[in-house]
Length: 144
Image (tube, rainbow, N blue to C red):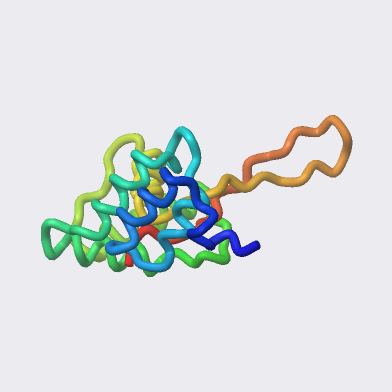
């Protein structure tokens, strides 16, 4: 079964798909399939992010959004350190001020606006070991 087949969506999923399809196109099905009930991948947060990154208010914001989006590859896993470096570099390049406090948290928040992300953990080698958080992997883009 094709997971992007809109005909198998529930009524709520179809409504959500139809509301974002005109904005982000064919990736709308990926977005709907990767929504979670709560957290950063919830419908309310994701819809807000789609509208935010696809409707910049200024030229600087448009440039920032385009450059930040280009920095992320869907096939990569990114550590928190990489998130901080990527966002800080792009903010500097477009002339936006650097974050002065809670830098790591703010950089994560910035990149969570542009993609749906899954958390990536190590696979324990021995029974009883706990997985270790490695980073984040983008699942799908929210910006066209």
